[in-house]
Length: 122
Image (cartoon, rainbow, N blue to C red; front, side, top):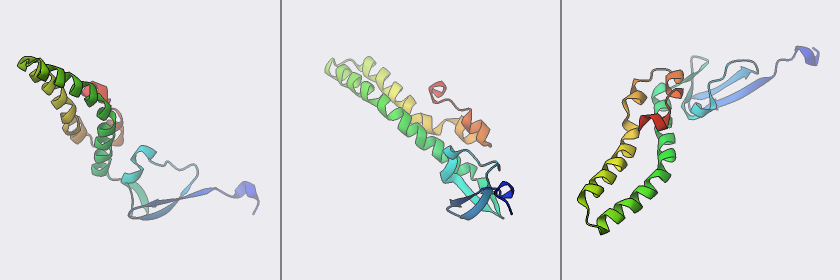
């Protein structure tokens, strides 16, 4: 057999097993790598796990957004301005609520999860 007839194969290991893929086979997005599962000899993505991965990405994305709000809250606290404190607290709560946004749980496909833009959830 010549090298031209050899189809490169890729070994993909998941928490539920391993599978060989031809180089040209459609492999799910790497973004969801931790949600890949081998089921009946096929590579599938556990959508529930993929949703959790999106939530983890949101946690990472929103973390630096809290720092300026924390500073602003302390300024409002020092100024004894309850309205200002309430506004900042509401902004911080919006960030906390991103991980429970209905769009995440409503997504039933990877395409729907991929279409979620974190900035637009605010």
